[in-house]
Image (cartoon, rainbow, N blue to C red; front, side, top):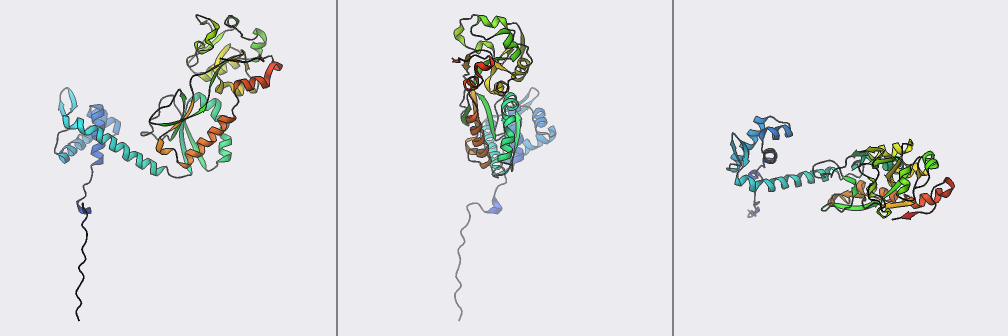
Amino acid sequence: MILPTRRTTRRRSATPPSQLRRLPLGSLRVFVAVAEQLSFTRAADALGVSVSAASMQVHALEQHLGLLLFRRDRRGVELTAEGVQLLPRVRDGLAQLQAAIDDTRQIRTSGALRISTLHSFLLQWLLPRLPDFEARHPKLSLLVETSDTAVDFNRSNVQAAIRFGIGPWPPFHSEKVLDEWLVPVCSPALFAKLGPVNSHGDLTRYRLLHSASEPWENWHSGLGHERWPDSGFAFDDSVAVVRAAESGRGLALARWSLIAAEVQNGRLVIASPIITPYQRCYHFVCLPRMRGLAKLVTFRDWLMAQAAAFPRPEQCLASAGAGRGQAASLEVN
């Protein structure tokens, strides 16, 4: 007996694998570079390839599309109308593809976490606390780089940043970590010699240490001054101002986060009861899609705990108090 065979009907794929188009990703990357630079030479240098190789990649893409993307003449290179229309979509598509690859690479709960912060904040606040992080999370390594410019998370390996500013910075996720204050400080010997600063006139007894990032103009504006003394030393580095104050070179207006440890161990004293809250503060910043990354959450939670335990200037002044000759009555303005 011959049984009839059952005909199996295979559902055809809308796009059979053999007919899948291979996207010319290399050519698209070169196209974006040339379009942004409007120069084959500069684009080739940025990509680390020869000019002829960049030109061949663009020519291959134009053949693939059947369109001219650039007009070339003796004056240089410019996009055609088709090139102008294609550029933002290709650039966004490549960025999304790179982000997807980076996210997949960073899914691990262990391994290095790369963060960015200010040089001054790293040296004076974060670095002394990192041994505690290492003891609590020995399997998680931190790679810390310093910069005072905005982080391009989509084009760098940085996964989180600690930034100093007003915030927020959409479309990034940001959380306030730490408030900041401006505090006049000097060495104990200089304070014993020249006394506390309770008015603008008292400043004339001191040589002022000027910082580009914390100018004296940012201190308490209610003193009625019109012009700050310009005598003394000027620095473009916040840590250099702290070191100059420690050495007795003059009176510095410093961020509290940078001098709290020096005040607590007696290397600096608060020279005035007038403490000025700074408009800017420290924020934890990352891409919204990275908020749930386990190693990033671990660092963020530790950072917030450290910030919560960090004493305010009035707390430190009250504990040191008049016993060291510092002003016992604090005025926060």
